[in-house]
Length: 251
Image (cartoon, rainbow, N blue to C red; front, side, top):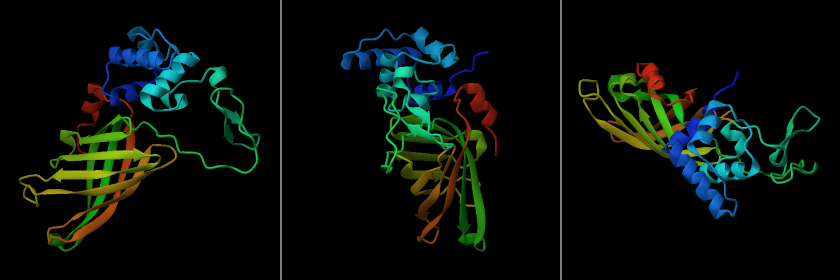
């Protein structure tokens, strides 16, 4: 029984590419690198269906070029010449050279850049704020949101049924640090009478890539600058209509 490659599919959709577009981009990446390939829509379908789980090296390099992500992050098992991960004999894993599959030399560790993950999918957004107009009570804002990733940029939009106050965010990914801006349009018939709030946000990605945790900064009703905690918690890598419909309700 095959397991669909949801990581690759979510990455492709985060790039806003159809399967044809993705195959065309892979062929172009191969041509530019001097390694022509025959990527097709059918091949992309086989990868996403999980019937092909280990692309040939030329395809693997094209996939990394187009997505900006290491092949392992895309849900594939690397072919032997591309093998990067090996058991270090101490319960951990070593990152090997991508062209030889040879493990790194043991000794003094050197800093390695944190590979950028793919965050496309449905997430639960949760933040806390103090309402000065309601006796300084602490409230929690909850939205189901859709994240679409294009290279190092994240576009986030709340599902309309998850809240009567639409939320949008535009973020930039730098390693495990995510930084950007947020905007929330409050409900016309709600406590804040349609007021539009906006500010900045910075989050740190946990090693699993399934939680982003940090703080927001924004202005309050008394025109002072406030801050508070904000988390994004992964729910589902799919962004198809059935998945979005399933999460289009209040958390």
